[in-house]
Image (spheres, rainbow, N blue to C red):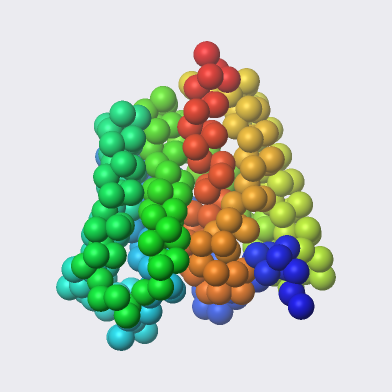
Length: 268
């Protein structure tokens, strides 16, 4: 019998150009953070929308879901039962660009949208468990995608540093954890990578973080990032399920709301 710990431990998907796609995601996310908060919000909204649709698709598979990303986008836009959930997730990081009050309103609206979506869906399309798991997915993934946007309002470099730290953890975990004999090797490598990047950010002293803020953000990332991927496994079913869009945000699932709240306080 598989233990709960083993069930939610992430088995890295190595099919396809994962390293190049990860590097592309890093470049797009950090580049948009450097350009403007609206650009970052748009990128994170796309990430949240794709991840939310993936959660929905895994729990409510629809005919014709196999295929490339372009075909999936066309199917979502043409499916009134899926589109509201996807838009609800995308609205959260977009709302974060306007402030925390607007973000809270978007979260409340998102929680209302999912039950309404279920009413529109035919009864045979989903089990009762789909509503709570989809609602949790919209809220959790929306918040995860919103943290860099909220930190960007505090200062652009704060968002950049957060994205660098998260990407460093992801890279260390993937490169060492893939094929590792023990499940702890990847997370430990990710934490070490976060430590190196934290040291670099503290030495440079980028405003508004300066030294204290960089150390605080690095410490939060080192402590909370390892819990994100197992939470992502909970959303998609288990750690062996292929979920490339959820995995783009999973490190932020627990880290994001804490970092968005604690980082400004640590530098105040």
